[in-house]
Amino acid sequence: MKSNKEIALDAIELVKPAIEKLFERTNRKELHIVVMDPSIKPWEGNFEESILIESSLGNPSQWTIEFDKLARKKAHQAWRNNTPNIHQQTVHPSSLREGDVLFYGSFVYGDIVVACSGVEQWYDMLISSWIALAIEQLTISEYQSIKITTPTQQYR
Image (cartoon, rainbow, N blue to C red):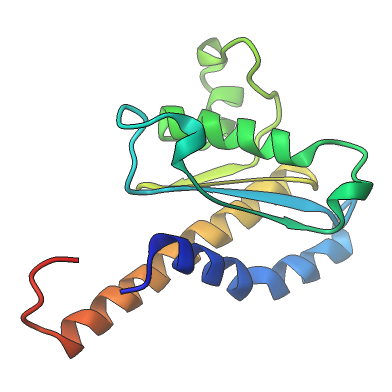
């Protein structure tokens, strides 16, 4: 079975044409993506070690804002609370901590946490959702293929 990292990278490549199409209506064409390892819970490891992959679109050396740092902060909020960070921003701002970013743009689907930064926050969240859903469905496809090709395999 492919690793979580391989599947996450595959998911980003799969949705990249949609992201590029979306760039036609966004305020810029730069983006940083953070995907957390869905097999590590906040109480099992620290945040930095739990980042599965990071990926940038556009040219980071030309960014006027550190989108990578913003995306990591969005991911940290979502991973810490197991809910998209829009939830803290709009429903439970009392849970915001010192240093938390005040923009949303993450998405949580089951144990998958994805956060983006670079375009408008609602589009960051949309892209995060595309990637999260793609990761889960690609994993399901992998899982089903393994069950079909090796039906007696007992462990991952």
